[in-house]
Image (cartoon, rainbow, N blue to C red; front, side):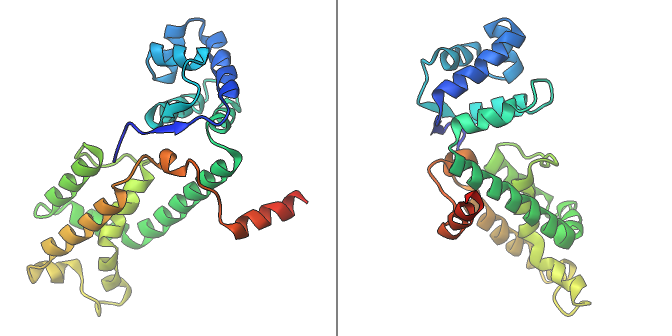
Amino acid sequence: MHQKHQIKIAEPEMLRDILSEVLKECKTHRMAAQRLGITQPTFTRLLNGIVTKRIRADTYQKIKNALGDGSFEWGLEDFFKLSVLSFLESEVKANYERWMTEEHNRLQRRAGAVFEEVFGHPGYHGLFTRFLGRVTRSPERPQPNETRLWIALYRAVEPLAAAAETWGVERSWQEIDQGGQLKGFLRASLERERIILDREEVIDRIHGREPPDEYLAELAEDWQ
């Protein structure tokens, strides 16, 4: 996944106001930048309006995470998100986050046990670490909050969960393993997930997108 994509800032003045609040609490540009996890030059440029049109996706994520960790004034994270994303883009982002949560929970219930069995198998563990290395540059097991990576891992083995659900009528991973076909199956499944994940940062893809017409119609009805 690409790491240095930039997104357009929707409300530059609001962004500067938010960073001013951070500066008031932190006293200096250096301390404010440290608290936000970004460099001091980046903080100063954003605060002074030198960078008024675009912000790097990873910078956005670092500031959002810092503002939402409970150490700053409540609500500052929400205002920050609105300063970068338009209202409709925020709706797209919220919908995507709901989808990730629901999809992760569904897949974990269905394929979590199978994943742990296959992931821990010495003959196949390397396939997963190589996949993770390609999509994240780290072969380590994802953190619990890396929801989208878990979705990809669970989807790679999801069809193998059908064996337990059908009381053995569908082929289990052990049966496929005995037939010498499991490595090919996993390679294809993981490559499919890698292709899907080969994209810009999520926040960059959200920029410029709007909910479908039927959702906008529902919003209009709610406003009336």
